[in-house]
Image (tube, rainbow, N blue to C red; front, side, top):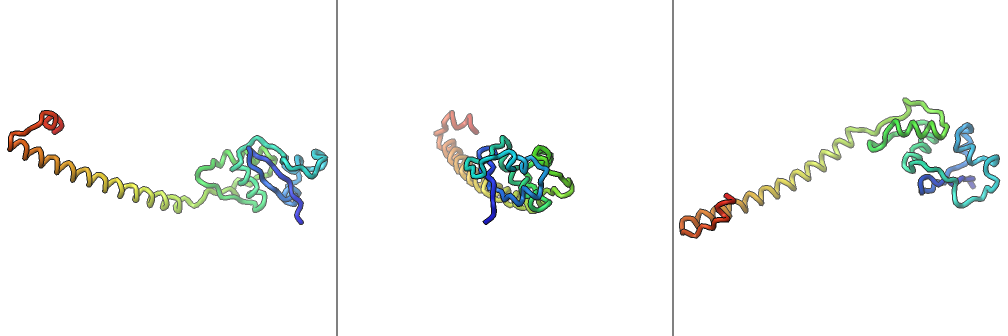
Length: 153
């Protein structure tokens, strides 16, 4: 069974294999989890870190794979600062942004659907306006003009 360490990062718990930490012996995370710092190896609360929990997951990805693909919502600089804070040696070239063309396509499709929906509502409003305008003309012909209606037109 793999030995693990629990980190509580910004309220989210991560169970991390000790072998991953041992692969980065000079990191702050390895030091925090070491027996030199932790006498109680069966801790359940987790080692608390007041950091961003989403970026911590990306830091673990980088530690595991030697590279990481950032979602568009995550700043590359913020991740680099976290990696530096944790004492993890970084190859900046190994930090990539997700494929922006796939994201752009997804956003385009969402906007297209929204625009189509807005166009339907606009068309319905125009149709309703035309009907009201027709009724107003008919009322004028019959001498039933309402002053409020005239002000609107």
